[in-house]
Length: 434
Ligand code: GAP
Image 1 (cartoon, protein in one colour):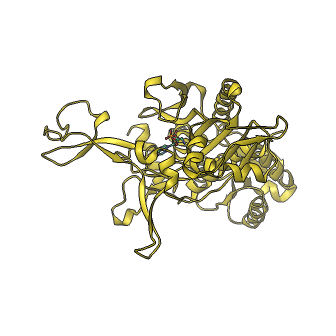
Image 2 (image 1 turned 90 degrees about the horizontal axis):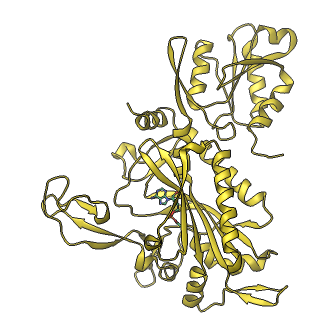
Image 3 (image 1 turned 180 degrees about the vertical axis):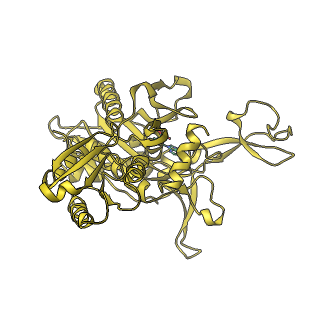
């Protein structure tokens, strides 16, 4: 099995991620996050929000609706430009993206292709029940447009000065022709986007500072520098709104893939929405007594792709005492479960003490209690889901109120007074920075 297959299999087996609607045969490009996956996802989103919104005075947040007025997507250019060129095989009727084909005939049956046709990638939906008043609109293909649409509402409700940014985390939808590589390219996914508004003369410095900030963040959540690189988009292939785009790419087991784009969108979006809505979306700077349309620098990251990178980076196997130990080496603050608490054996009052300790720790971070099977197997179960610490209550605990704490990566154990365990683990798994 190659590494990707092992990661996918572990995700299903351990309840990180499985196919959506599996009992009905699944649905292409949609995924469900199970009990551990949802914890991992929360940890990631919390950390991003904490780092880029709560720790910074120049950032505020937004949580806008997924369904918007259809004009939003006319103004943004998505109705006109957000499409793939597709061809159909005249023999087997299969559909392909023209830009991804390497041959002039169908790779499956050798048949001839139709002429390429444009296919818009937005998911349509119908809002309202009456035939007269219902409107056709779209599920948003990116979260950022509501940041531009709400720009004035936001900046006039909080006291902000240029430069400042608005951040949003939320679902986006795209009718991808070829969803593939597990959750890498899906039809429903989440984005973490920042639109950072600045003066045009600051654009290069702001761009460079975001490059540094996002790179450092990926390192801080556990991605290794040797698995990351920058890709600069050539001028001729930039998206319709972009003056410059660089991507952070990660080396997945299936090859390099985009994790996050960093784009200079200039004044494109605010100008378009001003034009289409008839509303003045310029920023008023009271200090300079000036109205201006700010330049926008956009770091735009995918939650699901980052999750996939964390899973691939964490997956490890090693030989321990003649057996293969599978261990997910998540950064402790990303790990879905922070501590496993075990009694060495169920008898002799150990189970009760371990239970009580686990209930106490649970108030500070995610924990599991486990008393089934040999202690070695219980450690392995936690290694496989990436739990960084395992606490064991043994007979010595009854004598002097100390427990052992085992480190997932080194497998070394330290003995500590029971009432220091919460702080010992708490400070190692917390997202807070000093
Ligand atoms: N607002 C700019 C924008 O949406 P993008 O490069 O199309 O730019 C940004 O998307 C990020 O969203 C990507 O870097 C990727 O992480 C994520 N993303 C985009 N399409 C995706 C898909 N089909 N499945 C999973 N993630 C996707």
